[in-house]
Length: 334
Image (cartoon, rainbow, N blue to C red; front, side, top):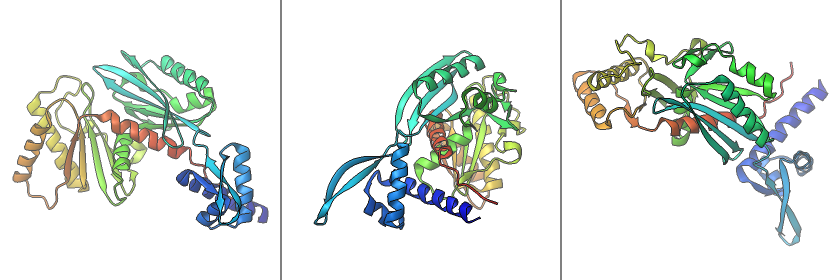
């Protein structure tokens, strides 16, 4: 038990040093000891181990209060890379974006691929090609228009995605951990991360793609609420009387948006509702919602934000979530 506890404490300490170095980028050993509240002896040992791994490297020497110059250590943000893939629609086709980022969320590679419809074989080949070019990739994050249940994509507006066991396939093929996330959940995570909102905020994101049914993400207490089997936010099942696979008339679209805002406000009372759509002008939706508020009598109303670029928040969210998946898991002992 003592050996186990000592190992656990070492893991805690090395992760603490790792996180501090990620934040400050460069530090001497005395500075690192001060920042981490660890002893200089402990810091010496952990810095050596991180240097041996390649996660830290020696940088430059700096003056040290009249003593001999101190060696500065720099964090290697390229020590681990993440491959972020996401599937979005563009002018009626599937747009596949592959991005490689380092631990500082700096982009080192990006390419886009257009498919008339999603092709599983081609998608896996793209991943394989990117991994071949970037040997330091240690995790794969994939954003999809759908939900995974027990490892299988069971709900998706893209018929070609249904039934695929993407996590199992890719982990078996490439030997790397794979994280798959719903597109709207990722987008609202990205929006909240960029806005640096307090964890108490409740934020709803509703995405209206051009040729597919809408989806919703619920961000509450600093995390996405997924519900049973990850099915929270499947607003396409609401009885709105809309055929989302056909062209939706402007008046019906505006009426449906207002009904959805009213519904989530009555149930969740969010601080903000973010509407992603580029089918009609923003002013029409804003004016219609303002008229709805005048007719309704509700104790609170959310701030309604209309954004015409879903991709920006989708990508930001996938990058943020995938980098979180790279954080070392703390070893637990029973």
